[in-house]
Image (cartoon, rainbow, N blue to C red; front, top):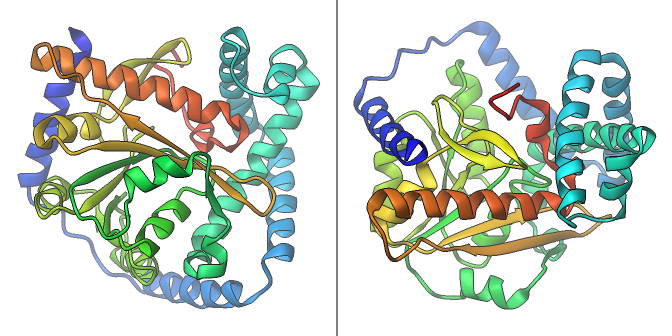
Length: 333
């Protein structure tokens, strides 16, 4: 009951935030210079070969692993919980099982987490590269039939896509856009308006429609009403309290948005998560079912629980690529 009440409260709070006027953000010389520098750097990196850049990102991740002690300890504690849970439930691969029982193997996984974290920033800076057909061919659904069901060629209809801060988070959206699926995606609002405009413009060049997360609720609903697709990253409760769920065996909080939208609109909801495997981008797709019976509270609670279990299965594919590990996840922490 607490979970469902929190979901409804979160929904009301989100609507209140949507109606409230956004605080005025000031343009600054520093913001203009940084945004311009990022634009130039992005253009340069996009033109350079990917291989050396990936190796450089991986090396820089090693530097951060060695020098950022507090962050390393947080990632290690989070990964230890996840790997132990997965091993206890016969989930994950051999590296996960080894990390659950061997401190040295766990430390190797933590080091890899830093490399993937930095690589995510590299992919963000060079996102235009991955919109090219040759690059999108590297996206390989684990089950192609599910990809055709979620994003059928030529079909239009409201769809909710749920993702995590995991692996190559933006690349599956580019892949869907290339299949003719228009996607609207809220993005966390940055305090500096020039930086906000840079990120919205850079992603917009790939065909994505990026909107600020502040005030996004009405835009998202209108998008679904037009029969289009919205993509929501929903493994961190940013800017709100979130809804308490059981995640990897302990209480955590997830955004209520996907559950509330799925209940209100009836739109099919899909988990889409892309991980890195060498030069390939294997992609997991799962249909998230809204219970058809029960009270509103029971249906919301059922959806949130199913979503949490789907998140666990997705993370089990490569726990070191879940970069929410760099933040506090569980209530007890």
